[in-house]
Image (cartoon, rainbow, N blue to C red; front, side):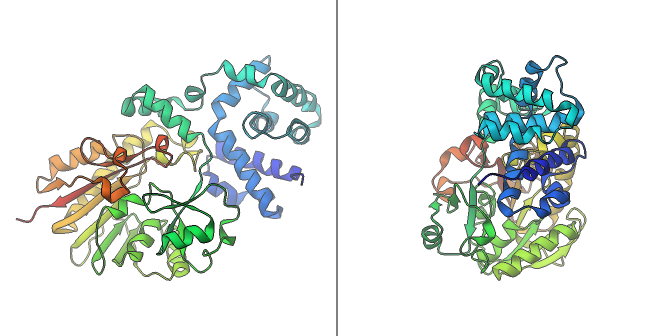
Length: 420
């Protein structure tokens, strides 16, 4: 079945909304009118196509620069040309479809240019690619500097290579993981996550409607497990939305209070709790200022961050954020950690996590916190807690994952408040 040309139009509009309108891809998906008239299959194609362009934008633009006398394409055909190159070089779209239907997106007077450029890319694409340092080209300068500073250049290149791959669908189940793996045709990973390489429409999969599971990256499911046995215990989930970890904690038997300052995002938590038939107390408040009536024995703080560890799923982050955002967020992370410390019982456990690849947001924030709070100490993670994957534990005993491990990037530390 041929993909409708309007799917490519929707993809072009998504790109414009992200790169010019500075909107997240999720927000753009909700706002682009063309998407609403498309079949689910074509909506999925439009999202995949725009996400591929965002992941490979540096390489795509470098290829276009080799094909155009002026280096950059005219604005009216910038998005169509990017989409055409992505189809030809990264998605394996047949040339007649990638060229012909992309040309249809261009104004009449520029269609000859678009056709000529894409015909050349179809013919000489491999040679054009060979001239480009793709990991460096596809990583904005601000992010490349952070990755190299945090990990060294060799590891940074491995991380970027992982980010450029379309991610699988990872699932966390309430119970009976092995049974659901069989029902879904999924792989049961050592950490307990179920993985589907190709899933189609998530809402149509067995178990979704009845709330047996929820979508959650393998790495995102690990921090909540570091709290240990919480069955029957009071647990505070700070910065809880959109709620994957809230569901985990509730499914593990915790008496959960979920706090987030975004009422809109908390609506999603409430919806997911209803679908999965799990319970949690919902509090709409700024976690750095809110105070509970009594301290908690367990706290999970999944702090706001640059989210650079989630670029596989949210490639627009690389183009919407910058180094100044990281600095602002580090100050917020310190405030949240200090606030969480006041909410924790003596001998209680606090897990701090960020989905960032910037060590300044992870290990450096933990070190600074421990300097300020001498009544806290780090409790190292053991391999047995994370499916035997000892490679995910750093020298300090913290959990550290990256796209080079085939999952999102997370940093998580477990801290305990000493009883006096």
